[in-house]
Length: 103
Image 1 (tube, rainbow, N blue to C red):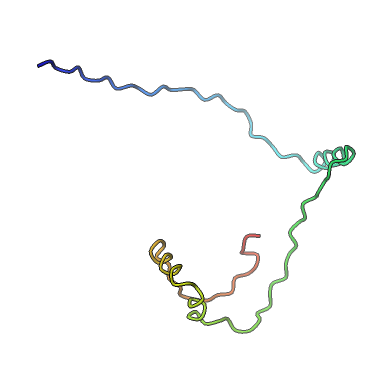
Image 2 (tube, rainbow, N blue to C red):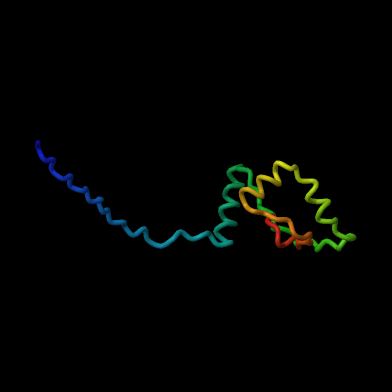
């Protein structure tokens, strides 16, 4: 019987990471305005992103619906999946301010 030689474990190659320098910075307003003006001169369409308008808080329009009524609107398969995956329980109905929601 021939004894097998133990396999040498390969050491991982260490590759040094080069310093990438300072992080890129965003252009200031003057640079952005100059870029937009040049693009407009070249005939490129220039669209300015609108600032999100501060929506007025919705006035409380009556009473909130009952929790059981809202839960009944969710299909049974979805409720079961939520329970299985997330152990989600519906416990209350609350009004959330619009600014707390993602745009």
